[in-house]
Amino acid sequence: MSNQGEHVHPVLAEDMSSDSGKPGKLGTFIEYAEKPTSSGDFPPVDWYERLKAEYTGQHAGETFPAGCDPNRMAQAILTLNETESVKVLEELLETQRDDYTIDQRMLARVRELIQGHEACEMEQGEWSYEVCKRAGLYRNWSPYAEVRAVTLPYDDPNEACESFRAYVLGYFWVCVCTMVNTFFSPRQPGISIPGSVVQLLLVPMGRGMAWLLPDWGFRFRGTRYTINPGPWTSKEQLFATIIFTGASSIGNFTGLLVLRMPVFFNQRWATFGKGVSFSWWGNDEPRAGVDFQLYNNNASLYKVPEGGFGLAPEDYPRGW
Image (cartoon, rainbow, N blue to C red; front, side):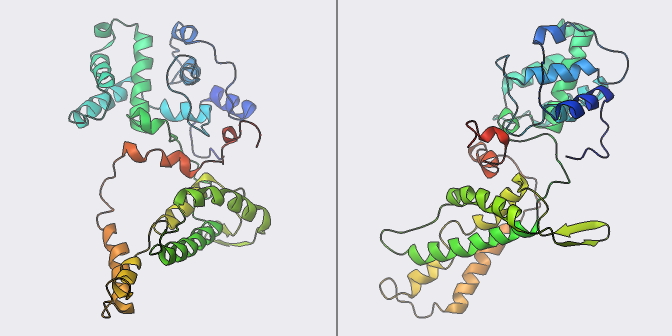
């Protein structure tokens, strides 16, 4: 992973280079809470270690999501000073005041924190850490614990996403799923290929293409484009999943089959042109309004880690 352009605390940078992103001996919550706040670089080094310690699962709290680098997570969260953090928390209370899906206890705690350390009966250093941590979590990650459990607060822009092999595998399964689902859906019993099966098959197929394809490419305006950018990534996995998702269910031409076939409605006016119109409007018009602000649906959050399942080291607890 490349950290070019990112300001990394010197001590944290040394930790990242020496430990390769793996959490070491992190100590306890009480040990870091008793440390005084440093007056040098902001944020203090002990804040990074304390934040990582809180996410180890030792304190009955949240844990690192799959594939998360503890050092990069801490670096991405602790980016705001006290003044900025208070403003962020005040904006959060204003924007989420009518949100009944958010944790109300969390909002109540935020209302206490923005009153200052004296109102909360906290030490100045302890209050500063708590305010900066919560503001960084809510602005740079998410105010919803369900979202934080399945996403990362940082991004690697050098990780392959819209690659040649992702397009090949995505459209390959578009053709296969469309053919099978459309042809067999009118049968009794109907046969279809669910999207979860394709997601599982994408992992070995993507890794196989990463192993078989040569590193052929070209350079255009300083950027190199290749058919094999390296190991198969979770971004490619999710990108290919998005491509074939539209074909994982019953095809748009199923309505044409029901109208046209004599065993059903025997409507002879349902021609090929009618089917093309159905397909066009069924796929294109629902995209209207995609530029609007998106929101998270708790019922679909499981699909976020599912899209990259099998690509993180912790997905193989027995070395399979």
